Amino acid sequence: MRFLDALPRLSSTIIFCCLVPLILTGHSEIDAYKESNQEEIRIHYLTDWQIEPSFKYDALCFLNTLTADSFYLKHYQSEFEEFEKRLKKPVKKALSNLKRKIKDEKKSIISVFFCLYFSAVDDKTIDDMLMTIQNSESMHKNLKKTPYYTDGGWRLYESVRNDLKTALIFLKEIQFESYWKKYILPKVNETIRQTRRELPKYDITGEVEAHLGFKLPSQKITAYILYFSRPHGIKITGTRYLTNVAWPLEVVLRNAIHEMMHPPYDLASDIELKKVIYLLKKDEFLMDKVLNHNPSYGYNSFETFIEENCVQALEQIINEKLNIEAEARTRWKEADEGMHVFAAALYSVMKKEKFNQKGEKFRDFLIRMIRSGELAPGRIKIIYDNFYAQGS
Image 1 (cartoon, rainbow, N blue to C red):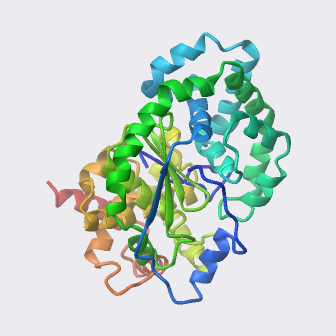
Image 2: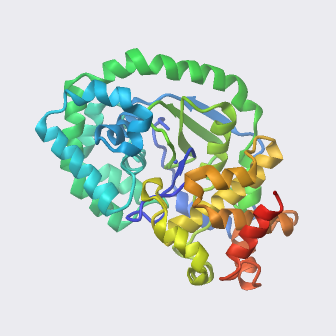
């Protein structure tokens, strides 16, 4: 799932958006993406699963709750009540600023934004993060080597650095890490113990690459199991993602498949693809969902909305192949208040056209379906309605 309008290439998924040191080789993630269009695809057939806890990402996700945002209190009301009485006026002001600047003004998600940015550095503790806030040059340099960097996103980070510093100092002063290790980490470790037994049975790397039509940067996939990340799954830099301790194995797997496909194409430099996708702006049914969905779920730009819907349709196809799927019609009626109408329509067309049987790149398939009129503006609601009529 992709979220930040300030970061048009960012992803996060609601129930679908990792801490080992970030290894930056001679090729950046975007270089690997571009090279994949020029060479034969070398598909990995052995997914190297890494499953870890992360204090850093859990602390950053907890900021959502500390802002007193009702969207998160329904998941963490008791935890908020435990810490709310310890919030002093300067900390409340800093948290309010984070919510206003990142969520209210930029229509983005605090946890998604900060987890992505801090995945570009090796920080593990609050002290580490405070040092990075003081001098963010390494973060800036590393992030620019990924597909997720934008100048607008970096300006947003610069504008909230002091507020984030105040919030993290508060967490340090109240010994939040000790609390996390005592009460949260045991729950996370138990989930990790169970997940490590089952996850290696699934090879998803080859499936993702085959359906996208290009190779991933690595066959190693790192899943960070968090406590405070609900309701989001979050893609960070590299082949890494954040999932939640409360979710069963099949959801953790779906998260992995989903997040590894962000981005499913290189919209920033693909002029032909951008021109064709922008034709969809003429579809009134689709644009109503783009413009009027609940912004707390993210996907608040046309580009991020379409990308997320494309990934959801792709993921559903792979999930069904691996027998870990949620029922498609129910999924898109219930998930994120039914906003993903393009995912349902695209999935329906993919099934009809037997997508991927001849190894066609997803990018090429999408262009072909829009240009041919199959997914042309005005067709989305017709396909969507027929999709649900068939299941009645």
